[in-house]
Image (cartoon, rainbow, N blue to C red; front, top):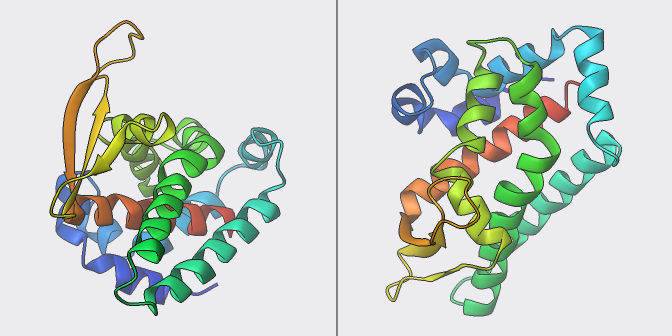
Length: 193
């Protein structure tokens, strides 16, 4: 499979991929291609481990991602409809931050080689601040900022369940970056298993 289209889409985030995810400039320039190669060249044992980590067959997970992309493409054609926009935000946040970490990123961060683009991206998507946002989405602890330019959410900084929830905001440009990385990792990984 040729990943040039997705690589081109992700190039807009190259600076953030190198500074925040700690990818090399070469990885950031061809993110989907790098992740696809990382997964394609895993040992057969690691590929079995990835498949075994999910009770849902991976081809079904890929089909869900493709259906989700169809929904997103359709939703983008509807303008000035708050109901569609809110449904889009709900589905995108669930897929990118609840569904995919559980189904894909945790096992990738475990089995992919140190220093690989797949491992670095999977770890970035599994750790704070993305992890805190994921928990807020999963537990319904979020709302829109009054100007709709950000999402306000409440999460714990650590993993102690007795820790008080703290208030955070994620601006749209940060959310778009996290979502793009999430979708890129999942497409490239699932397509190469």
